[in-house]
Length: 165
Image (cartoon, rainbow, N blue to C red; front, top):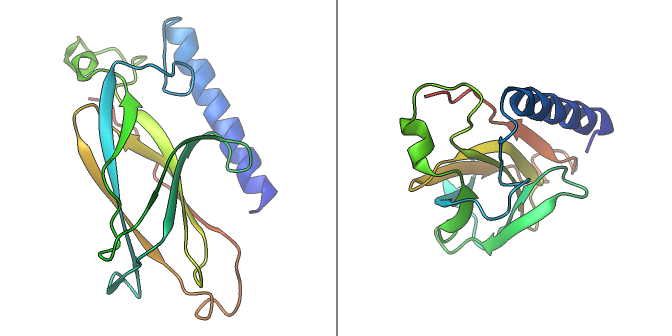
C-alpha cells in the first residue's frame, strides 16, 4: 500500500479524534473504549466480475486503525454465496441519536475491512459506519489479478461520510 495514502489517513483520523475530543471530553469510540454499550452487525458480500459471481472462501478481516498495525476486531470467511455471517461489532448505544442534537457525539462506530482471496487483488474498505441494532450489508467487488495485468497493489476505498443525525 502506498505509504502516503496511509499517512494521510492516519493524519485525518487523528484530526477528527482531536476535534471531537476537544468538543466533548467524554467522547468515546470503539477504538478507545472496548466495551461500548451497543452492538451492530456487518455482513460482507464479496463478488467479482461487476457483482456477477460470488467469491467463496474470501478472508474478511475487520479492524480499526492502520492496516499494518491495526487492532483486528473480527475475521470471517465468505460462504458459497460470497457472504459472511453477520459480524457483531461494538457501537455507541442508539439512544445517543435520540438526544438533542450535539455534533460532538458520534452515534456510530467506524471500521475498516480487508478482503483477501487467492487470485484477486486485496481490497480495503475504510470507515464503514456501523450503527447499534442495525445489520449493514457492504458489497465488495474483487478484481482478478489477471485482469489487473498482474498488479497486486491493494485497492482502497474510503467510505467516510458525515452521518450526523
